[in-house]
Each structure stands twice: as structure tokens, then as C-alpha cells.
Image (cartoon, rainbow, N blue to C red):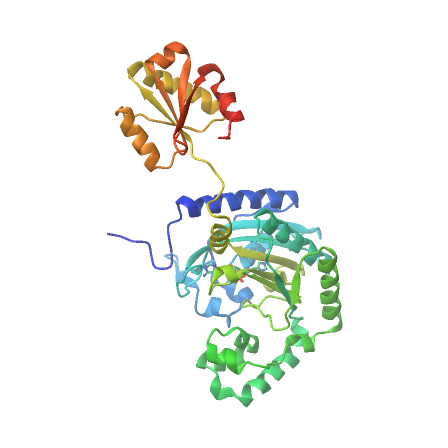
Length: 418
Ligand code: HAM
């Protein structure tokens, strides 16, 4: 029997209900902030990621699903979507005017990673990007959107970890300091780190191997190498976040696994997520549009792991909000037709109705309703039709009452069931 491919999974039931609910809240929040949705393809030319996320990053180097298609093109299934959004924005000339552009996306990403709870090879991200504004105010405004969304989702105890990773100009001195530090205890680092220190020393800092992490104790931090403008940008951002009461911690050790960041970089972790504690990450990427062949346009954004968000929501809030439909059970042949007519009418009036069409004894219908966790069943027999009433059974309480057919919709709306 065929099974899902390793690292992928089917999403349904309670987990899917969280996905749907989160997506709905996301769309509302994005609309309130003037962010427009964009849907880009899963497949991109491999260069889109090599030139943005970086050839020396684990994401491109080890984790990418890439292949040569039947036409001989080297393509990749997107491991993230900032690069794809930038590619699209350049292609469709969004940057022809210098106006700011705000975009968001919700969709699946692919990384060939070791599978764990909260870490999959196909996973979902919600992301938001603002282009065309280089100010710390733009960072703060985009973070306000993020925190409003988290608040709407009822996640209020999360702390933002922020850092400034400076600009490409301040990196050479920092890289030299890292190499000097590395040289002192090079035998303690893994083979990959030996490669990284040559290709891109920053990547040594996010090696996941515990012995490398231990050897990194006391490593030089980028914050000590920042230029004047980056320092000012960072200080101003912190000032605004404090004024906006967005809780944050300044973490000079924070670097991100993608190469395109300049100045602000940030993450939000949650202890409720276990080993995969990163719920979201993002930052500023002022060189990316140019790097991908566009004009000089600054950018800032973030992406949340939707799978991880759903795990968190389930852990904190239990099941997603939402209700089962009402099961309408006709008893007898003429009631079956009448029930269909009523179901149509009531659905138009806004009730969620599922109709029993199996023509089985009432007892069996009620057993199914209980097994499937219906809260309400409505029973319509010939005598009820004659009297213009219907029996409404609360399956969780084990109670029932008779309601008038011509007022049942408004009666139900006013009752505890709505
Ligand atoms: P990222 O930190 O690589 O950033 O991913 C963002 C989030 O995606 C992570 O915090 C995590 O929740 C989720 N995620 C990553 N890998 C997996 C996985 N294998 N399974 C489940 N969830 C995962 C980016 O992707 C950047 N594009 C974010 C960004 C947007 N920066 C600027 N704009």
C-alpha cells in the first residue's frame, strides 16, 4: 500500500481546522495592514535560491529538492519564498515606481531535512514582506503586523530575539575575527565547519552539532563590528519597539541560516515547540532585489512556520474553534423529502445542516451521530410535520425539546448552540 513520502504528511481533521482558522485570521490581519497576497510557483530556477539564500547555506547546499526537468532546466522546489517573491516583483516590474510594496503569502515549502515533530520536508509558511523602505520605522511597522497577528491568535507570551547583522561592508573584519577564533581550536570543529570557515564563516555559527556549538563558546560577535548607520538603525528600532510595548531581547549571537540579511535579523522561539523551537524568523535584506537582477530596493519581512504554529495552537488552546453541522434525521418517506426541502431553506438562512439520507432506523442514525461527535440532531417524523414542529436533541447533554418549524432557525440562533 502506498504511503506518504518520508517527511511529508496529510493534513486533515483537528490539525487542518487550525490551519484554516490561522489562515483566515492571517488574511484579515494582512488586509487591515494593506498587505496584498501573492502566489508564486513552487518551482523556481535553482539560481533564484543560490543567489539569495546562498550557496554555502545548509538550505541550498544540503536541503534543496532540485532536479533537471524534462526540458533540461535545473529547477528547485522552493525551500523558502522571499527569493521567489523578489523574483516575481522584479519580473512584473513592481519596483518601477519607488513606492513601497507590501506582500504576503501562505504556501508549502520544501527542505530535505531530518524529520521530527515540527520539522518536515514539506512544510507551510505564512510570510510578509515590505519593499522600498529602508527605515527602522519600516522594520517596526512590519513587526507590529507580526505581533498583532500573534496576538489575534492568542499567542501573547512570545519574545522576539533581535540582532543587527550589519552590512556586507562590515563583514570582512568580523569574518577575520571569526577565522582567528576558529584557528585556535580548529580540531574541535566538524568537517562541514572547516568548509564553512573558508566559504562563509558566518555559517559556522549556526552549525547544529553540539561539539561545534561548545567550541563556539565566547566567539566574536557581529555587534562589535557594526558601522555607524547599522548601530543607529538598531538603536532606533529598539526605541520604537519599547514604545510600542513589543517585548524583545537583544541577542548579539543571533545569526540566520540564510545569507541575504542586512542589519536587522530576528527570531521568535517557543519552549512549547520542543526541539524545533523556532516559530518564525526574518529580517532586513537591503541587497537582495539587486542581487536577483532588480533595482536597488530595500526589503524587510518574516515567515512563520504554519505547521509549528498549529502545534502551538493545539497545545495552548486545545481544538480549533468551529462547530459540527446539525444532523437532520427524517423518519419516514414523506419526511425524507420534507427534510431535504427544509435543509435547503435552512442552509440559505445560514445554518449548517448535514442530512441523514441512509434510510436506516432512527436508533442507528443517533448512534452514528454520537460516534461522530455531533452536538445536535433534529428529528423530523410524519407526526412532527403534521404539527409543524421538530424534535431537537442535544446529544452532549442528553436532552431534547420540541421547536416550531417556522421559528426553529431563529430559536436555534438565540439558544446556547450558536
Ligand atoms: P526560516 O527561518 O528559514 O526563514 O524559516 C521560517 C520558519 O519556517 C521557521 O522559523 C520555522 O518555523 C519554519 N520552518 C523552517 N523549516 C521548517 C521545516 N523543515 N519544517 C517545519 N517548519 C519549518 C525563511 O524562510 C525566510 N524566508 C523568512 C523571511 C521572510 N525573511 C525575510 N522575509
